[in-house]
Image (tube, rainbow, N blue to C red; front, side, top):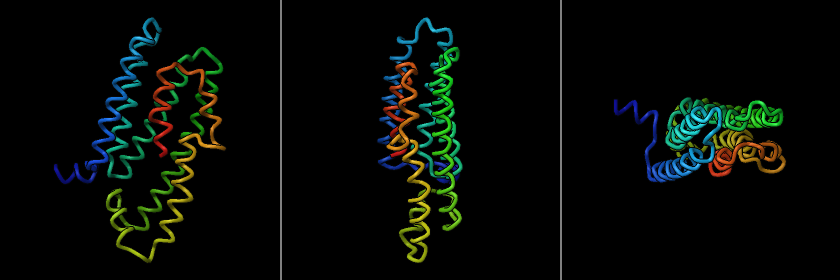
Length: 192
């Protein structure tokens, strides 16, 4: 069981520090949302989506396995789109969610391609193993560099809504305030 946990999760000082940050931020935004969204027709579902998003970000922060990381990344993207589209009767909310979805899923695709290339080159499925391999091996640095820069960096730029990819973030300004807080405090910075 311990070996399986080590293959799936990486617990170190950085991941634990980020986990505390994610939990504190998630609890703060969740508490705010519980008061802000009172009276909303889909109140309970909205709060569960926030909790689910925080849990998926915790998986991203602590993942060591590429598949687990990507599944958590996709879950976070789906939940973010659903939170943006919370006011489903608003055409603008639907359109904002669709635009955000295109950008977030494109980011996920680029990151998946980059990680798949790294996994193929290194024959490793753990993020820590890939890092260890890249430090030990001199011969494949050019390919690893290409995979990281061309795919993972583009995915991070898309996710972070940096110029010229900022339109999805601007468009989502009509989302409820707790959703904006989650976007700006976590999801957008997830690219970093």
